[in-house]
Length: 218
Length: 326
Image (cartoon, rainbow over all chains, first blue to last red; front, side):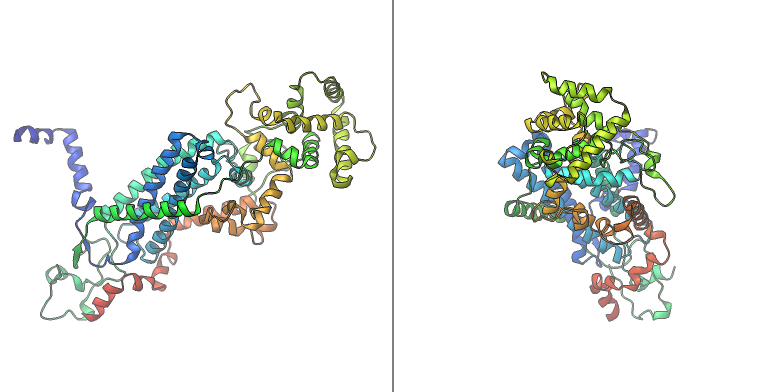
């Protein structure tokens, strides 16, 4: 039985090699750690997890709205409440994310080979703005009409208005429920994985006085 | 994890650790799953509370029928401007039409024209003549359409332009009070379009052009609606105008898209607020600022700001306090 298990991850097996490589890049103790550096002891660190949690609820409430159809929330009390859940989870998502962003900025969190973590975070922030914006366009109410007719000028002014046509509700609905959440999901997963792999950035100018003498001497 | 020595390391011997190194200092217990579960529950409770207390806005959309009934004079004036090619859409340029010299530039770069006419809109035919041609059993309308079609382009433009001017000079823009003049079939055409809109027929006609049954593209009815004053009047009453930070707000007392504050801010100040190329300039500026934010780790000076503004001393105050004590 043991031999069979070893064979499955054998040296000549490409899936086994892929697994070993994945485990080496993303070791379980880093993905789901049970300890963290002692300097990680500020409330600012909570806002990353809160952003993720709000995103989860935005996805859950958005999925509920999608299952019932685009116009459901205009005619159903339950639907209107689900829409309210969707709206406020998104408002909370941005509130937490902006605090998270400022916190990471003042910690200069890109230090120590963490530039890609910062960049994926910024791109995810911009992607979130685009996703929320398309949400406002597909509400099918007065806000949608006004925002679409105003926003078209910005997109047309840089020549992309015909490809990303904010007046085309069907196109915007697909961007909002499929394309942008997919891109955003990939970015957020990548961002979180990078945070876990690279670890939380140490304090600015942390002296090596914390280092055990044998390591400090090297 | 911390190892102490009998002889403290003097400051000159200390080196700064690289932020890329594994943390060599003390650690503390941490359950990432527990933290995420607690965060999820807290956010769920907050979301339900906010949704229950504040709900969400849902102002009914304005139909062409509602517009034609609530402000028929504005509707007729807009229809005539679509006919004589003077409306906002008719003179817009790409992507709707090829109006000479129309289209915003980013500096010397005509990005809007480079986009090309990809969503062509012929306002006279798409918004007025096409829907009227589909109206059955109306001999007077058929005669007006025939007269208009048989006329030269210059004659058509003169009729529509003269009638547009007469409407602008009439009390309240009321078609019933325009000065006498030779407007050809234009008054009949605009009157019949008003009738069609008030009956609700124009809403469907503009979304089902081209033999479509399923409608999901509202480009044409929204452009027509936005060419009139009625939509903007309703928006301004809700404090949604462009100079009222309108892009980031929504109806009622809701936060709207507060994260668009910087984008909306530029529209409130010069030179953007008075520029014909405001949209292109603001988009260009925001693209540049976004790029700077994303590439911040590589930009000398900007990446040092966190060292100059010691917010990090507050965030890591426990750590720095321990350092000071040792």
